Image 1 (cartoon, rainbow, N blue to C red):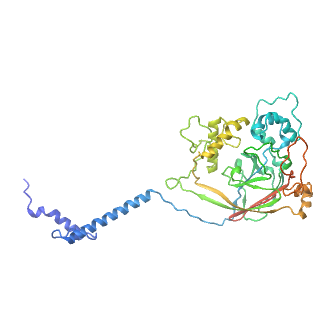
Image 2 (cartoon, rainbow, N blue to C red; image 1 turned 90 degrees about the vertical axis):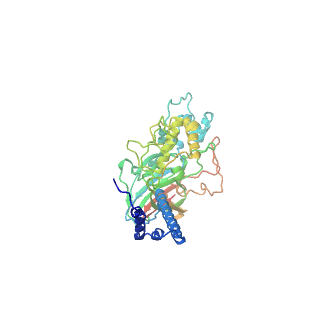
Image 3 (cartoon, one colour; image 1 turned 60 degrees about the horizontal axis):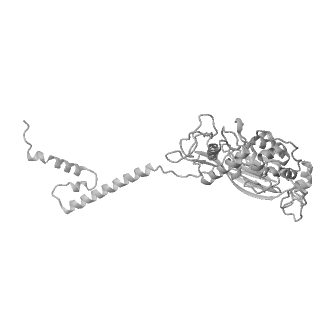
Length: 456
């Protein structure tokens, strides 16, 4: 049987605490547990130790919370590059369809939706185009394809392109890729499509980039029959400078170039890198624009596709989201949208696709995160008149055109004070018709900036 502990053994725990407190390097602990009874001095030391411990625990909790927020910094770094990948350049004629290529069958199917021409007005519209009316007993074709209409009646680059050079070497339509946008059939230089090698440039300045001369073919512009939402009143081309990973949204991000002016565009390549979760919300997953019969949720980012897809980009995500929305609402897709849904008919464009897309854009229903890596081009524009009187005759001889065609003569310029006459039964614009003019664009890149010169 264990003997009952004595008084000295009962005091051992308190003695051990005092020994530990006296040997501990923590300030104040030895004064709190020192020998003797409770005194005001010991109470002050105890309060000081407790307050210090509370402050320490608060700081630890604050740092743990701060770490859980995954803060990050934004770093800007400007670097010199001895060789830059040349950007993709997409250009569209502002006029979507050529008047000489429209047929009575085109007017039957696409006239009301695209041009605002009702069936009873077809004969008058054909007269305005300088075309004979539909023959008696005309029967429209049972089917109609919008993509084929734009491919057949849109401005052909083979006819618009008068001259093309890249870094002094000749180029041609074979160096451009056909792409459909909301403006119709457009053309992209250095698109990298089908695995084509991307062009590079070692320096900037004139002669180190792309230089092309275009004929805007203003004599092929459609007469404005009535004011519709997308009726073009301008003449010229729209241009967008973008990376090869990003699909062009030239109707929203493109800039215009007008005939009669040389437009200089200085652009700087900017590479942006965003952090993935948990520090950020960027995404690098490819997207599937096809419609899912049973979507798992509202219009968020489309689900990744198991097949090969283009790299993720913000505009690509929005385009895929819009394609899914229109396919869900209308059972078809617009011509410029990706995916496997059938292309909408002109009537579906008018009744469903255009209103659905406009409503979606107003609601901003697409939720697309930033890409983890992207390239964009900041631009600055300036312009001068072109050509000079001294150069007009030379350019007319070189391109086998009249001087009025090259210069935009006074009878057809926007600042003319004369009035034009129009045959009866045709439609005349508010101002005299402007003869088409030649257009030249030059794009080059330096070690860190590129310069676009557009001559029109």
